[in-house]
Image (cartoon, rainbow, N blue to C red; front, side, top):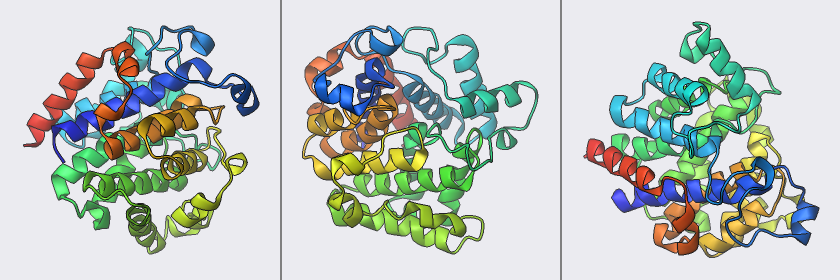
Length: 319
C-alpha cells in the first residue's frame, strides 16, 4: 500500500457516492429507463454535480480521526457530531442526508452517552450507515498490523468499535469486518475472485468461533464469491439493509472489469444508490486505481483537493 492507494480508495468512495446522490431512492425500473451514465446535477437532493453525501462525510471524519488520534471512539463521535451540527466535512457546508440510526446515535452522544453505548442494538437497526464509512479502518489497520490484519482478532475489535458508535448490532459489525477483510486483500494487490473469497473466509472463520457473532452468520450465506457470481441482476438487492449493500457492492466488483462499468452498474441498481456506489467505489478504486476513474467525474468532484490533502496527511502519519 502507498499514498496512491489511499487516494484511490477515498476518491473511489467519494465518486461512487456522488454518482448516486442525484438518483437516491429511485427504483431500478425507472433507472433502467433513464440510466445514470455519468455525473448528474440536482435530482433527489437538489445538489450540484459531484456532490457527495453522508457516506463520504463520515468516512472523511473517520480518516481524519484515525490520522490524528488512532482508534479513539470519543474523537470519532465528536467529529461525527460536528458533521451533523456544523456541516463539518460536508461537500458544501450543509448536511442534506442522514440515516435514522446515525441520527439516534448522535442524539444519544449529545445527551452525554458514552460513545460505545450510542449505537442502536436492535435487529431492525442494521442500515448500512457504518458500512458506508468503514473503509478508512481497513487502510489504518493495514498500516498498523500489516497485510495479515484480517487474521487478527484484535483488528476486528477495532473495526467493531468504529461500527458500534452508531450501529451496534452484530450484523452491522460482521458486515464491516467482512468488507475490511476484502479491502485488505485488495490493499495487498490480490484482486482475483479467489482472493476476495479468502478475505471473506478469514472473517467468517473468526466470527464462527465468537459466541456473540456466530448465530448471525447464517444471514451471510450470499456473501460468497461463488454465490454472487451466479446471481442474476434481478436477484441483487440494493435497499438500505447492510447485508444487501455488501452483497450488491461485491456483485458489481465481480461482474465488471473496470471502475466505470462497476460503478455505473452499482448506481443503476436503484434505491440506496449513493451508499451502494460508495461501498463499491472504495473497493473499485483500490482495485483499478484512481486514474481509472473517468476524468470528467473527478473534475466535478466536490472538494477533491481537500480529500487528496487528507489522504496525504493520513499517509504521512502512518509512515
